[in-house]
Image (cartoon, rainbow, N blue to C red):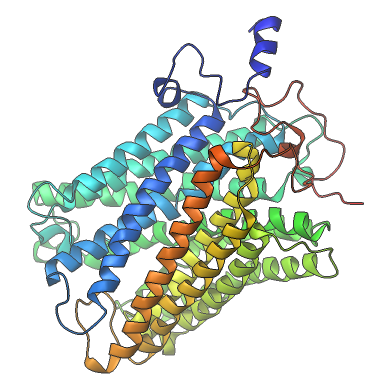
Length: 537
C-alpha cells in the first residue's frame, strides 16, 4: 500500500473503511480483525438470545410439578439445544472470538492478527455450525434430545436429529482450532518492538494460554463426534455395548476435551478481570508474573482432571483418587488469581463504575462456583450429589456467574473503544443489579434441592421441591429483565450515546492510545514499548 493510500486509510475508522465492497458485503468479506470481532459479537448476541430463551422455557416448565407448558420429549429437546447453543456457541467462543479478536492486536501493538483470511474463515465456520445447530430443531425426525454431552449409547440409538447437531459441533471445533492457531502465532510473531513477554497485558496472556488449549484439546472432540456420526450411519460398534463397543470410552474421550474446554471458557474471563481491576483501582497489578503463570498452570493442569466427571461411571478406585487429587490441585492457580485480584484492590483509589461492579460480581460468584467444585471433586460427596441439581448450580455459578459476568464486564469496559460512544451509567448499574440479584435467586436454590436429591435433566419432580423451584423460576424472570435492560442500553448507546474520548477510563494499555473507534490500520506507526502495561503514578 502506498503512503498516500495508507494515510487515507488512517483517517478513517474501521466502520468507515470497507475496502472496495460496500454495505453488508464489506463486513462478511472483511479481513479487519476489529470488524470480525464485531461480527462475532453480533452473532454471539443472536445465539445467546436463542439459548437463553430455551433456558427460560425450561424454568417455566419446572415452575410446578407435572406438565406445565410442554411434553417430556420437548423438554429434553429444550435442554439439549440450550446446552449446545450456550456451550458451543456462546461460552466457549465468547470472549476470545469477540473481545479477543478486537483487542489482541491492539494490545500488542500489531495492525492485525497473523492470518486475517483464516480469521474470517473461522467466523464463516462458526456461523455455519451455529445455523446447522438451529436447523436441527426443524429438520429430521425431531430436535435432538440427548443433552449437550451426546452421551452414548443413547445418542447412537435415538431417532431424533442428533447427527446434524453433532456435525454442527464438529464444524464449530474447526473454527475454535483455527482461532487458537491464529492467536498463538500472533502473540509470538507480531508483538511491538520492546514488548517482551512480561510487558504483555495479562488479557493477552489469558488468550495465549487459552489458544493452546483450543489447539491441543479440540481435535479430540472432533474425532469423538465424528465417531458418533460414523456409528449412527454405518453401525460400527465404537460405543454401543450391543455391538462390542464401550460407552465409558465415549465419556473419556468427551471429557478429555470438555474439561479443558471449561478453561477455554474461564481463563479469558480471568484475563478480562485482570485488565479492569488496575484501571478502576488506579494501581499496578499485584503479582503480575504469578497471574501470567497461573493462566498457563490452569491450562496445563486442566488437561488431567477429566475423570472427576466419571466418579459414578465405574472407573477404578485408584483412578478416582488420582483424579480427585488433581481436581484439588487445579484450584491452586485459580486461588492465586483471586488473591492477587483482592491484593490489587487493596488501598487502591477505587472508582465503582459498571465494569468494576461486574468484576466484583465475577469474583464473588466464581468463588462460590469454585468452592462447590471442590465439593464435587471429593469422592464421598460426589457420590451423593452427582447427577443432581447441585451440579447444575455449580456449573452455572462458574460458567454464567463467571464467564458471562466477565464478558459483560469486558463489554462495558471496552464499549467506548469499540463504538466511540459512552453508555448510560445509571441504566447499566440498574441492569447489573437485576442480573446479580436474579442470578442468585435463580441458581442458589438449586444447591439446596440438589443436596436434597432432586435429579437434573428431569422433566418432573416431587412436590417437596416445589417451593424452591418456584423461587428459581421467578429468579429467571428477574435475570431476563436485567439482560434486556443491559442489551437495550448498549444497543441504544451505539448511536445515541455521548461521544467517548480515546481514553475515558484512563487505561494504560496500548488500545487506549488510539482514537475511539480505532483507525482501520490501528496505529499510524507501530509503537515502541518501554515499560509494563500497568503503570500508574
